Length: 256
Image 1: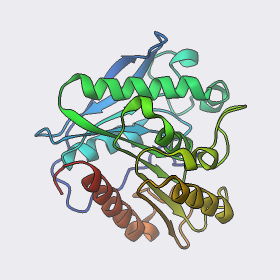
Image 2 (image 1 turned 180 degrees about the horizontal axis):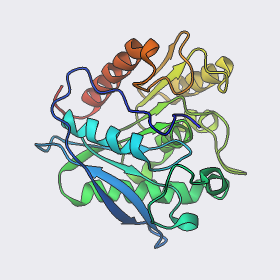
Image 3 (image 1 turned 45 degrees about the vertical axis):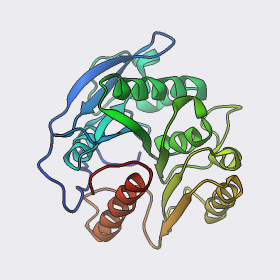
Image 4 (image 1 turned 90 degrees about the horizontal axis):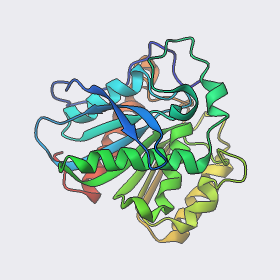
């Protein structure tokens, strides 16, 4: 588990008023219905992000994160992964997410990400789209760098694990040399779940791909440092927002 149930995402240092989002149901290409939380900016900027949550899927932290993106002029949709096994009903803090994580596959999650991308494009507000993922979702965000079918402008991953997420699947390390779009990776230096040598393998693979990329490690920061309740890492959270916004700005025209 990355965050406690009551965790709040850190807000961008100069965010405007939060934009309330709404629960929507998306339909993937295989006809699976999945939950998502959609928040729109006050004025369209042409940029949108598909938020890929950690192992618990869609819950409050990521709903509020979508609203934080909207507050800085970026439309956002946070998706769920468990439509095939858990349906689209509301879930409480006792939801047994790991039993559903074990039933996910890389092709299915990629299909769900595509549904999020299509949803943002369908409104005509977003021309440049990015994925932004965390832990489990961070791995999947990195994998999309080599997925030319989505037409992404770039991918962002926070402490995405480097191993395959389903049996026989690819890993961020194996696809890094095949990346087709810019990549931003943010990691904690004290993250015991992601060995430093794997981060360096990922960095080297991206260098071989030739795409613009940045892999930044915050010394002493733990896994899931991007959490407003971790006051000891407020500086890292603010810097992560800065790097993320500069990355989006560099690869799509959005307000600073």
